Image (cartoon, rainbow over all chains, first blue to last red; front, side):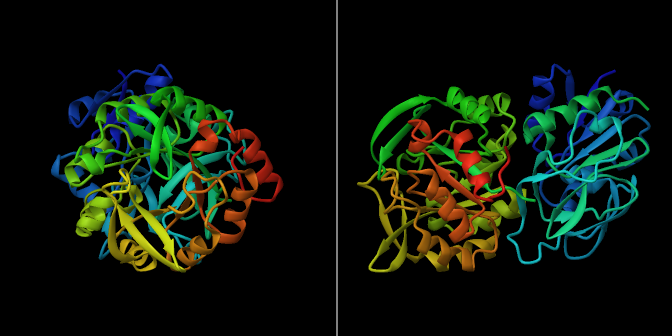
Length: 199
Length: 255
């Protein structure tokens, strides 16, 4: 009945959990399929390389579980990339969880330093409960080299060399490319919104 | 638009924040969590914690305070000092650090950069470089935490920056030792030279003494972030005033 943070075996779990603790939201870290299935809400964090993270998820036998969730799910940073169908990172493209249509590609920084690291603005905000009380031009903390293109599922964009999806939603699945747990009061607002979101 | 970052650096010794001049004569400037919270509230974009005694005394950073910092703040932070292995780095990341920074251990064993990149991804691998200018050449020094143990590495700074990027560093912090603690401005010439060969984000360190120094380093050396310690610890520069001044000078800032 609570919020489960999925232990993907490669993520910075502690900082995500602390962020919810600061909001007074009870969370539990788990890689147990039954616990994940019975959770009210699920956060899928992740850092590092996408193919490695998918390997970890498959190794834990969680791919099938994560592909059949009906409750609200929030992917953070690499966790947001894993919810897509195709991942370009690595020596050859690989399959993600496929919860959101589309492909994660290399962010073309147009010669600017890579990875895209630091505070960048959110723009083109759509009306969605996860963006309640979040204003266009708010800064969020990003660290990534790959990104989701702009699509019909984009709820907020950001720009570094090119425009990309900062937040996406497809049905019960949300994704944040930035780190809400490290994005000060804006990040806290987004996590708070997710902890209250209903379908 | 991506904002330029203002990064207070907290040198940590025995669990307290300290600051010396040109790495010497350290004085106590406060408690880690108190200072971290103060800087977060003032609008710091990121924090760096350097355990300045770790490398020289062959110790590792205490994961205990790493966890306490991670619980307390909601901005990113980097932990540095004596991280010599993938396991030591992993423990700090698991405790909640967003990035780990390596300096002397990377010079002693450059493969450590590749190993950290492969284990955690380049986004959390920072390579710190202590560089000293002599007769117009830039050279890397190691073990700078203790003047008696500081060593010449035989490496040229620009070559080491290029090698670190190739090996998988996700960010470079360039600490210009001639300028450290004397508040006469960042080493613009050296930072420009490094910027030209550095493909990842570059953070300037050493020499900040006034708001104009930050404006100069962003405008002239095009660095991604500027790190400073004593001017913030001693309230010579207030971060909200600094960021407002830089914004007014058309530098992208998160206010």
